[in-house]
Amino acid sequence: MSDSRRVPMGVDPFKPNSARIYNYMLGGKDYYEADREYAERVLLVAPDSKALAQMSRRFLLQGVTRAAEAGIRQFIDVGAGIPISPSVHEVAREIDPSVRVISVDSDPVVHAHATALLSGSSGQTPIWADLRDPDDLIERLRSEALIDFARPVAVLIVGVLHFIMDDEGPAEIIARLRAVMAPGSLLVLTHATSDSDSNFIRQAMSATRGSSAVPALRSSTEIATYLDGFEMLDPGLAPIQDWLDDDSPTTRVEILGCVCTKS
Image (tube, rainbow, N blue to C red):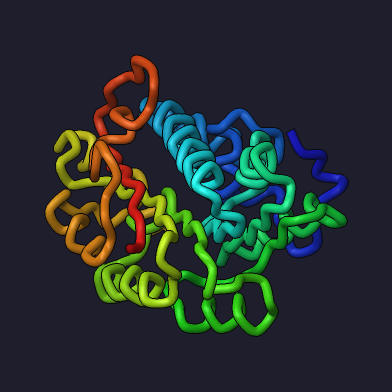
């Protein structure tokens, strides 16, 4: 657990933060007592949360491996969260040490932690930007020479899109990113679905009401429309358990994952 005497500037260790709670669920160490207590309350209502977080992370890293093995050497990790090992950077650089990872997050708490933890680290750069403004994100990646959009790139959007509300244009965001991705690029994406257990959905909505963690659950049919213009790799838009190589447990909430190519 992080020592509250060594807190990054701008971070309140006494107020629960979703990124640090997620870090706790993953078995990380960059959280505070307030985060642990909140996470344990969430697990009382939604005991699947820790297993889902860990499976989502494994799906993400599996997508990173696939992209790096396909020859992609630049990664945009959107909603990257607080760095935790094994990281996107570590997994990709096992295949090629020249890989560059841009870690994007709109949470100032995450940015403060990431800047402190990644200071002096080669090949990875944290930036504070918001997926809901894709034009600004793309312009920054270009103008700061972080990403060469003339070359294939892996865009990782795991555990993020279901927090983009309908009026914030999730389909338009994906379409804007697709437009600048070079042929041979990969999109790695997850989305929680309304096909989940109805009792769980009611409990989750009640538990998160009034917070920034209220998800916009969507049907698999609607999520699939966001991927127009991409070619889905097998097994397609499917529960993340179907992408993993072991007997992963079923869960009351269904998170769909996909890996898509830009032709």
